[in-house]
Length: 328
Image (cartoon, rainbow, N blue to C red; front, side, top):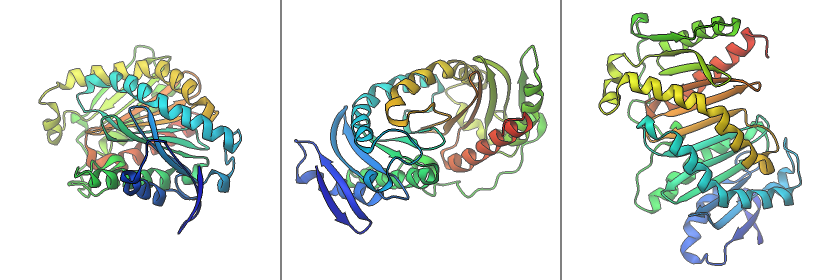
């Protein structure tokens, strides 16, 4: 363990015993990503083996999370080794989406977040931020670090998080015709459902989100999608629209149970229940937000170029639904 002074201030740096000068270019990229206003702890792992880390936890302290800095370093190190298996389980739950592997994950508790970025199969970065104000900047910094490391390896960027300007990212899509939207509702409608479906219809019609659904006790009570819009046709050459709707319902139904195991795995680091989860796959992204113990909102985009705007639209949908049901 060493303490070094960089252009962004003092860093606490640690390296595995096997790490030599060949890792210097990678670790330098990660060092530049770490700061008190961005990612507070950043580490690289290969097949569950720790390579190196850099952090500013001594400078930011406990932030919005409980526990000491020393405890957090120890817990992050333990989690980094286990995260490979947790992400494998999550990836298996998404396999039927036909959208590729998970390249980015955000587990946000509202007062801090843990972030996962895949460099290539078996190699990944994990990052920690201990306050809500730094989460978005940390997400962007980790995306840039991942793209930088992939460039060292001669690999193209994958635009995790949609931060890179990808083809189609600036395209303004016309609102979908209402008769192109597919709306399904459960048999017993609660007041929350009567609020959600019109809000979801508005969000999906705007074309940033391609799918939005509400689940209560793991049962889908309402869902809206734009899968029948003509420009989404290329996404349905190997999976039908009907099958994708069914798969999304299966994912939503399983998520509360899956998130319970995620909470247990992350508790030592975050100390709180995860509220917001983002799973960025090679083609699009899935967004989840838990409201209370039994309610879940789930959104998705099929287009990697719209990951950022879809996330913003989903967050807006969550806020509107929470406000309309008296939970702000």
